[in-house]
Image (cartoon, rainbow, N blue to C red; front, side):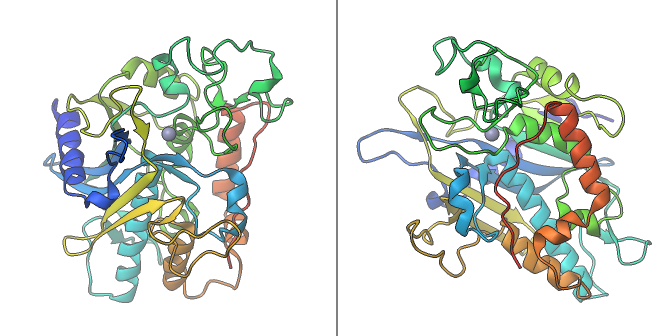
Length: 377
Ligand SMILES: [Zn+2]
């Protein structure tokens, strides 16, 4: 039975956890008096029997790294630090941490993950349904109606090559250019003169996850079946979400979302045009009652670990939600894993890759543009 106030309760839970974050994770008022803003997201499990909530992760952030900066990453830099993407990465790290503890101690039980009857596989406890809260509409297609005609590049016509990263792929547009166009894939928004990020907008990524699941390649190989979000909680824009999510992809292998409304405003949301986006991102992972991890992330690495572009990355710079950190846990779980790089492992996951390709074709029929191949041993 759907609890009418569910969206409200989820929003209150995530915002309460945000208020308890360390000040170093949050936007600041700069020395010149300019206030910073950010976006908040959280993944919450809802008990379908009792309607009780179990917070899994929260995250903040509005930045994405330009593609060329990933050259020295080796899986250690987090490319896309938009809050909802970080919260879902954190969800995957929580699963990996719970699974690794189950694998180490046969007598142990966890509240989210159980051992499956299938050999050496795991499942999410079947009382849980999953919700994603976001303090604003996801960037890209679902939020284009919030933009106004004075937006950068608003006057661009459909055939203007300036809006494309690859002029032969007209179903992928750069950021907010040609903002009145709907139903297309967009890269993460940024100032038009900024270095290009090839990371796709959160609308596109979330839409894809309703087909490919919110599992990453590692958790996909450990869980007995894919896991999907059931609810998306936002303060407004249900019509935009409906169009962007349910009219772009339908049919087989697509799990529709239920859009829930909430009223609570996020305390550090953008309120005026004078305010600036915060460079700081953060994640907090609620692995178990006793095991909660919080990290601030700056320029894709743990805050305090950033080095100049000409220098190598520092030891221990990888955030807990990075591909590098997740791969270390995965290798501890899969002790019989053949010696192979992360990308080779990912490529071996043919069922998931087929689903990814199929979903990309449906979202962008003219082709796809990949981000930097960020491999690690
Ligand atoms: Zn976004």
